Length: 455
Image (cartoon, rainbow, N blue to C red):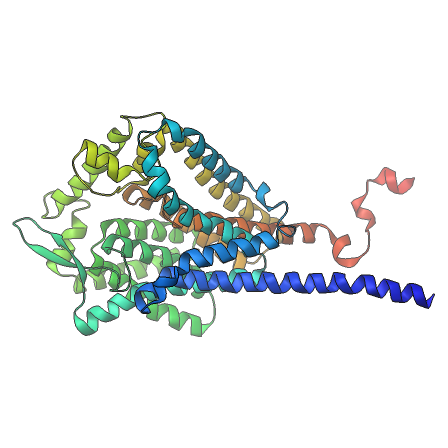
């Protein structure tokens, strides 16, 4: 008997040690991913001399990929998510269509690497974020990075007169526009995009909490909005209107929000310069000085669709929008429209496949919302607030993509990975709440039909 007990303990020890080792590897992977997020968004390579020489992004991606491979048994079944399946279809299409595109050499030599660096955000986020605590930490670090990227150039502007960019006005004049900090690499429109991304997280995750969070919210929000004014980003302003509409639609305090909106508009008009007012008015008034540039942007978007339709089936190749413009327009301007970019690079087939990927993200968020009804989650619970936030971010991205490229940018893939992770956690709670036998160790009779109990 004693020998059997000793043998059973010897068999148990390796199992416990294996679980402990797996937990340590998993935790280290998560910490390394948080560091990767900080490094990517805060641009440590530009801030720390010599840091870029070690190729930190490549090193981090390779290390995280290896760690996930070591945990492959734990990750079984996670790729069955519809969002994953949609992105795998996109991968397959890019590979199959490669010999048929106009510039396959450019895709292989240059552009596939940029695309992979963007897509890893989907895989890393979806596979590593597997607990509520990790989800909260990830959201906090991500939002911190976006807020920092806004406050840094704003601080430099207030204290040192920094702008970072300018825009051409009629008559040959130029007007200053706030761009990312010197260590960052974003132009005014991209800074506007960062602001529009951060605001839904701040609103839904800070405002409903205690007075300390409300004070932080009231300190950050005016600074974010003022920075948006300084960018003179019309796309960022439209994105903000999308977020504001969704917040208003979901809120039970519509009168209070209306009053707040009026106050903010009056305050914004009082701090704007005439050039800044003209810039934003050009969205609705073509007679303003900025009306010509707004009309030019619209013509550029239409032109990109026409350019894509010159090779409508499979496109010119992944990442070749600029190359196509050089050869056919004689200009090196990047794409200003994700949907046009999709047709230019992937053709109409790839366009439909990518839109299916976006549809699966929206559908997952809708499913999560329906599960909240079964879970009886409070409107003020973290999951409920995060779901509203992600819905607002999704629709803001969808609208802003009319004025912003994105096929080889991180933002859609990070959102997709976050939605996968979030959906998996909510689904886990839903199954646990609907299976009391698992939680209590009992098997209630209500689970079985009456005929089974009579027998």
